[in-house]
Image: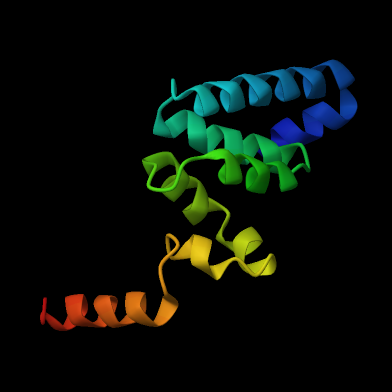
Length: 110
């Protein structure tokens, strides 16, 4: 991706093409007509374009419980932590309860 970013820095038309591709991926995601590789591409394109803030905006528009929301949350965990959004990382659940469930699962008590 760094090579693509460098290309965009030297050729404005290439950067514009990346923005168009990102916008297409975002529209497909929000319309529910996408797949996981395109979601991953969308997050990476936002990074290459130095527009990571758009990841949070897209995340906020995805419905709770969406498998794509889970994919995005894992990819932007640093952004969510920096924004103080630990509940989004845990899927909206209480942190202590989620931790307890995880411990039970690992210890075989489930």
